[in-house]
Length: 472
Image (tube, rainbow, N blue to C red):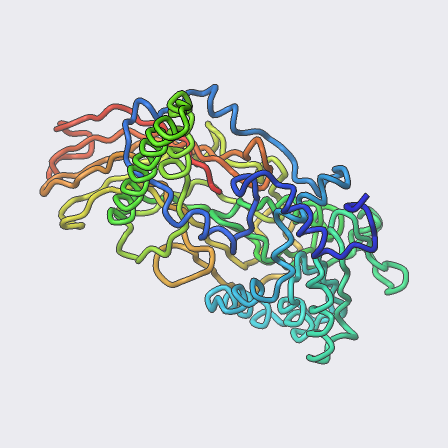
């Protein structure tokens, strides 16, 4: 009853549901809640005891849909509490607005292509405080529909009023899957008689990207908005293309720190078992294996949010996924799968280029591009004369940072030798929450003299390693 009550504010619904949730790990925190959960989540341990079989990976992943896609009111309310709730806070909006690289890329893309926006119908999916919608109006759009699920919508309306664009920007509160546009009232038209009756939008702008691009699964909502509202032949998506990258890195201090934390957690458990038995007469050691597994998953097999320096990269990053925002599908948003075009990777780490370094693991991030359409169906779409680019890789700060997957055992670099890493990456939604993902990383290492040809004599060939990491 409480969840369905229209008189209950969004804040109270959020607070109520948080109290019902069993533990913090069941949360689907948005990108601003992550560092407190995953500041140090990796340590070293026996490879054999941590290796997951195919069946284990299947048990923690699925092809689920996000709750805003026709789910029950209860599921939507839980999703709001877990995911959307904190986006209604100005503090979190400020974190995005204070991200200079994020802001500069979107500003350049919109204001640098004002000719494309002039007299156009624009939709901003997940407008937040409304800055992208305001820029679209300032760039000359005829109408802008700013869609916001949370109560941040009221602040967005205030921003439009304060900046003199309230007559252009209409803020609509609700999930984009549920809203309708005032087509008749605003005289909106499709590009041709063959288009769907709702396809009246010329440009969709959105800052939908999560950690390692896909986390949060907001891409599903964007695809729904595109398919329903965007003009299929002449419509534009901002950003237009996204690319996911993976690279081996040196991050040994954090990897060792995590190992220390794991050892400390297990040491505390041992003391707890001893004291519980001696003081209270109950032997809890039977739970040791399960507790150990929990700590391994938390400390060793969860990715870590990081701000890595540019020189932490040990090889040229590999592309692991590309998305054309005009043609990508819901299947694309559900992850990376074995056999995909970019699922396999190969790196050569030359020790003499990284003196004193150690391969500590992999880091993943994404780039976003704002450029002209490249798909065949968009041949007649307007061209962007001023493309823009956003990079979230090691180097200049962005609030996305990078996701680090520490090795359970690091790989030392030996002078005069090249270490090769060959493997694959899979990324699939968590079984318990469709907004979270698990990554399976397989790799094998080998070494050769740097003077040898790539297919020359090997000095060492290691066994294959396979681990499944949570992206919390």
